[in-house]
Image 1 (cartoon, rainbow, N blue to C red):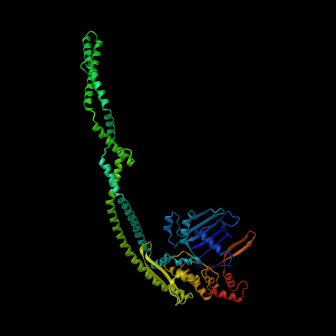
Image 2 (tube, one colour; image 1 turned 90 degrees about the vertical axis):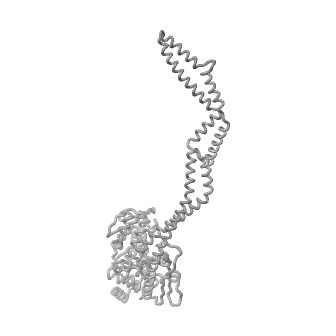
Image 3 (cartoon, one colour; image 1 turned 135 degrees about the vertical axis):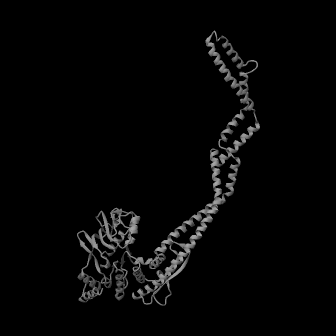
Length: 554
């Protein structure tokens, strides 16, 4: 419930403060006094788009603040989810708009986004104007009405959770099939690439070994000649370096008794002899094992050529990367078998979810059809009382091919204002006045089932008069009962007289220009205002008396 509204420097409003109460209140005022400005300010407070041109000329910014009693709206979860300070009794919403177009939004003094403000605004106030009648042509809106009347909140929450699982499963199944198809399209190519790499069977370290062996085989003759020459120099029959070193060592041993330094030289020569002899034996072994083999050289070079070709083909640098690529090919080929199993599992899960969704859809449809019958009866009764004696109203059901977020029901509100014309979709055949009355009737029915936010009707009674206007007023008065809040902006005295509170919007001329103001009318002021609405500026005693009678009959 909107308990107070503060507006500063908005359009023609320099400063405005007004308190509201529960029940049915009315706002009146001559055309052009600023009722639409007031409504625009409320809309802006609720998150509607704004324009810097709305800031009053000469002001730096405009401020609109509303205080709401939210004790009956169960908004604690919303505040917690959005990390907002929660007061079970009161919520203060403020919006600021600078002359440069920069806006700021606050909920209980906490800065929020425009989107969050709008979401909260929809929970606080429902503004119904002529263009809102277009909602009646919206199938989702029509379906929502039936769900409200059927009390489908819990079963729809269960359905919604299951539907999300179904949608996730369906997306995963589509993705799994696409991935499997892609792998299958590449299967032959993958198998060929893998077999080519596997048949080569390269081992880690093989590249270095082959490259070294290739160099040795290519220079085998030079290596053999060098080895042979070294052996010959060290140990041959004509001039053996080993024999000479041995003899030199023996000579030193002979004189060591007389020449002590010779002993050390003899030991060193003996050590050198042993080392050279070992080198000579190793040279002979290498010489025997290093025979030139053109066949082996060709074999090594062919192996290296195959290796380098595969590196180039698969754009890798070494055997490790090539083997890693082979493992990737194996994994992708395994996906074919795994993919079939995965798809089978997903399809089973899909079938299970479909079965459960079907069962829930059947329950939801049953509840909606029952609510539709009750709606048809109630709305017909109300619309007859609102001057539509031949009204026919039905809810048409059809089944969608696929599950949707709201089930499998598609509904149409069918309407005929007389007994002759066939039933047709409401939005296609109802006039503006008829749509307004249908919407008012729906609001009154819905009010019996849910805790509604503040309802503001903006000249919903346009185009009606007399007893019919009074009946529409009575219906708004009825909706405003039970501690609800309904505010009607009206031009009709029959409606204005029914308000428990009456506010007048007017213009005031001053040094700073024209200003829009609003005031709560006392009883005698109400009599005068309603009399003016009936007779114009030339008020008569008769008009005053009629106005008093209208107020007394509320």
